[in-house]
Image (cartoon, rainbow, N blue to C red; front, side, top):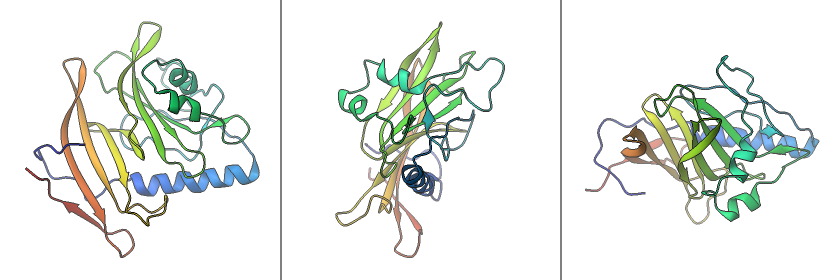
Length: 215
């Protein structure tokens, strides 16, 4: 991702690495026990991650009266903007539990909440595709996508945050060397990049060192 001029002080670090590690541990337990649990929560800010993957056609566990039940698996499979490779990798991890994480929030200023869907790998819970769907009549339209490896989209107070884990040659999937963070805002019917920065993790247990952007 190309850097933009910093508009404000970046966070010392995002929650992406810790949360994805928790997801990987949760998925490991799911694989070992072959138990499938479902349910996703409604979020209007903050990380979209949960400790559970979507099962079948999930019904959000905390919804408003206006919040419809959304099947994220069908959204992705029916979306022509999603690559064939992501669709091919979207398979159950155990039973009928799919590696899909979902959050809801008003990102585009509409009357109904938008849907953020992240597709992950089964083994390590690494992101392979992130999408934002905006309500349009009785359906949804894709208004944002990224299929960069190890990326994860989440709803933030400032808009949409996309975190991409970065790895050195000898890094394991669970322990990246750093992260690239990009913020987007909805302007003129599209998401526009407003901020970008890079964090490099220190060698002493998770210290984070922001890397200045290049002009």
